[in-house]
Length: 118
Image (cartoon, rainbow, N blue to C red; front, side, top):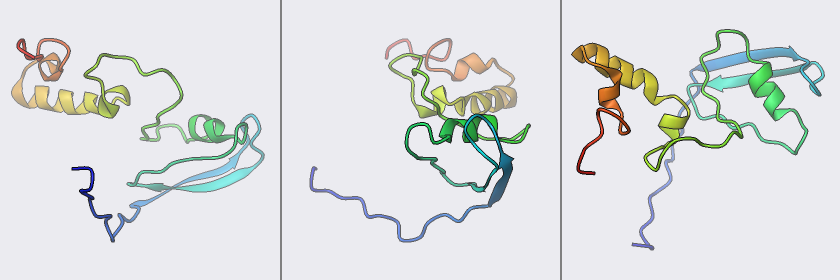
């Protein structure tokens, strides 16, 4: 099984648009303009102190629908995963609950919805 390889996709997903950040001046940023691709995984990298966190957390326009993962410790249980600690699973649970007229807790692995045998 260690020699099994999943082939890399030849075709990559195209961004569905961009989020324009203009004139970012938070902390050590000085009049930074950037277009962030939408609808794709976007990673901001750079050396320590280069303004990555300031750009992502302090420069996004109000009402921006973005999921960010920061450096805070991951909370939760052994059943936690990226969808739970980023909050992506919350709207899914709410949608399932609304569609079935039940509590969102029924769609959680940690409460009412947890399998009693697992």
